[in-house]
Amino acid sequence: MFSMAAVFRTPGAPLTIERIALDAPGPTEVLVRIAAVGLCRTDYHVMRGERRVAMQPMVLGHEAAGVVENVGTQVLGIGVGDHVVLTFIPGCGRCRWCRRGLHHLCAEGPRITQGPQLDGSYRRRDLDGRAVGAFCMIGAFSERTVVDQASVVVVDPDIPFDLAALVACGVPAGVGAARHRARVRPGERVLVVGCGGDGMNVVQGARLAGASMIIAADLVPAKLAWARGFGATHAVNAEGAALTSEVLALTDGVGVDHAFVCIDPPATLLPAFRATAKAGNVVITALTPDTVTDIKIPPLELFVTQKAIMGAVYGFASPRMQIPDLLRLYRKGDLKLKELITRTYALEEINHGYADLEAGKNIRGVVVF
Ligand code: CXF
Ligand code: ZN
Image (cartoon, rainbow, N blue to C red; front, side):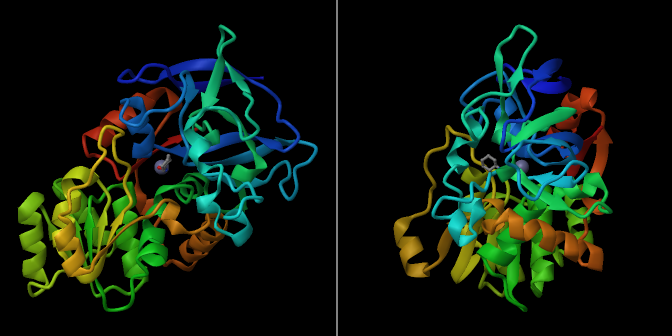
């Protein structure tokens, strides 16, 4: 069959809207009609050549929800008509991590920027017959996609697709960073640097965890205002040393218990580190361009302050656990999802959507089909 898709061909150039050929699912795969896909900054890093992927052309898009239209002969527990959320790291089920329920650490994770399916072959071709990759083994900027069952989580059909898509990446990444990585406790103080798709969800994760002070930091005033709606108690419009001193001033000179670096890690890490209390946590949730190879923290400062610097991909917990858990919280009214969507776009408008992201206009733009 054929599918319209937004294809990454050249770093620095817009995505091209093309008709691609899509093969039928293999034995362990499913065909999914994509209903909604979020415009996450990770795809934008790839578009700009800041995060290299192994091949072009490639269909990007990894924050998606849709409906299953066909299943391979060996697929278990997923049926035609099921509503599904796709996970940007597959859970192979066999590696040492998946066997412990830690699918966010799946041994296949490092292959998600390569292009082929989980089984190493391709399901997409362009109209010249050239193999087309699928980013994160998903390739969701497309009307339809074929993914391994390892990338699929079935969800309740009453959840609107645009909201279901959000729990595929930004929401678990941010909420999970607060709950599962830093393990924010009631009464603790939190700093969130960068209030985009990830950061806004760290804010709501910290609120869910009972933080007493949530300081949102961003250079876009509108994002600070939005952050208050998600639970931020304080807002700081500053970067660098000014960011550090404003946070210290708000915390009796002590600093926060947990700082989350949700944007631009090379520039924001040291100011966030210095705004963190002794023995506190500094959590990196944001992607760094490939060209950035070092972090600048004086080792003596790290030693004497006894802080921990940690990474959190996918919110440091299995998406198979988090996706249903987050949707339960949404249903109870404890988790905001609708409010994360600033604007929706048609597939043909996807480059416009990324221009809006770049301009700081969106928490999340979502392509709806
Ligand atoms: C990313 C995490 C790092 C590898 C590519 C996918 N996740 C989502 O934005
Ligand atoms: Zn993402």
